Image (cartoon, rainbow, N blue to C red; front, side, top):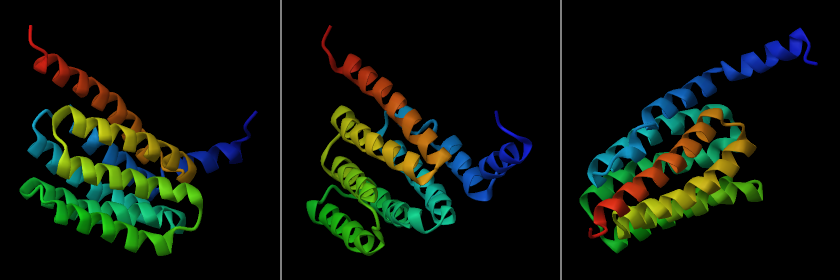
Length: 179
């Protein structure tokens, strides 16, 4: 049974500034994966990345890799709205690995870089259903990381994104199958 001081500590953590910003990121991101329009999808994803970069930074050093990746993703999402050039994609993948490697302190943090690499490839080289499948796989990696990092908002975002993404994948599949 939990005593009052344990309850207060839990509530203090749940209502801390980093977690509140994570919840805000979750609210912004809820509709992102319901977007069937790829341009609107990328724009909303950019807003989520801005919020989550702040969230992960405020969580502290163990989450700095996630903050770095979210900052890079802001620019990657904007670039992917305007070009599908493989060299631009490679630039962002190399940038994320070069800036993340010095901050990686435990193996589980690699999941974020691998997941973000997969999203980058998906945004630049894939469309519609295939793009969202790549992003779905990334969400699974980020779910594991968010559990480890204690990111409630990040965990909620990724679980919701995964569910919404699956629904959207099925809707896209339904609309592309000839009757």
